[in-house]
Image 1 (cartoon, rainbow, N blue to C red):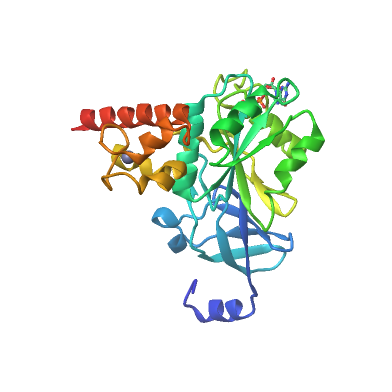
Image 2 (cartoon, rainbow, N blue to C red):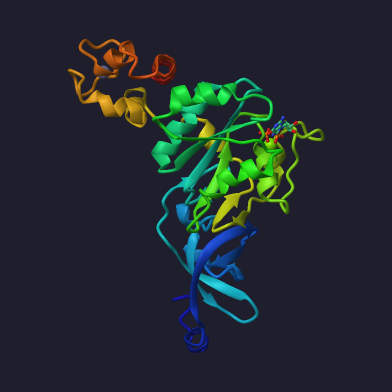
Length: 306
Ligand SMILES: Nc1nc2c(ncn2[C@@H]2O[C@H](COP(=O)(O)OP(=O)(O)O)[C@@H](O)[C@H]2O)c(=O)[nH]1
Ligand SMILES: [Mg+2]
Ligand SMILES: [Zn+2]
């Protein structure tokens, strides 16, 4: 209920309740798209917008329709997840972009995969710039084949981009993440000719990421939505303790039941099944080494906090 007055009650009784996805948010005005593609300009009453429940892009909401394409948000449905940079809810898929140049930063790649796992986001590793070299795709496949789906594309080859469209179904929301200059904006522009972002990685004018000054929006692509800003918060590990890092590596979890200790961190403990699998070549040695480095980094940071 929005208001208690009699006039409001009558007014409310004449409205239709609809549901949709918030595709844009500017200064408390939300654009909500319904399943059949209709857009409504909505506002949300203050009491809905408390704490974490402030309405954000990606939220699935119910709203009461007013006249002329306007509406009032009446409830926000439970979220699958919420990213902070950019602020966006209910991300289903992350296109983790890599390329032959700049050289892949696999530490970053692992961090993004860990965050995806934690946030219940399906990662898809996208090896871009296949027009320059196919070697990176081969390497990434040997390291990550069992961990995520991997597709090779070139932002300059529209037919290869179609491989990404198949993840944009059933209203799923996808975002891009990855290091600078791998071609995230180029891929976005190839998929979304209307939402021209600036390519080249760093804005010439401000020297900062070009996306920081823009409002984020969702764009309908096929049957799903694409976020027009990269998922920066997926690039940093936040709130993960060193001793739980192991739980976010799917391929490690699969063999860890064989470790002598259930709390095994796979670093120094005896009878460790993960280390044994690495030695036998069943788990990627390089990925294991990155894990140990990440583990030690988190441990150091924890020590310094105390
Ligand atoms: N050869 C080649 N160059 C690309 C491709 N995609 C992007 N680039 C170039 O890589 C540079 C960085 O691209 P950009 O989209 O700005 O990367 P971002 O920093 O990840 O957003 C630009 O000069 C692009 O033209 C590709 O598929 N092939
Ligand atoms: Mg960019
Ligand atoms: Zn172990």
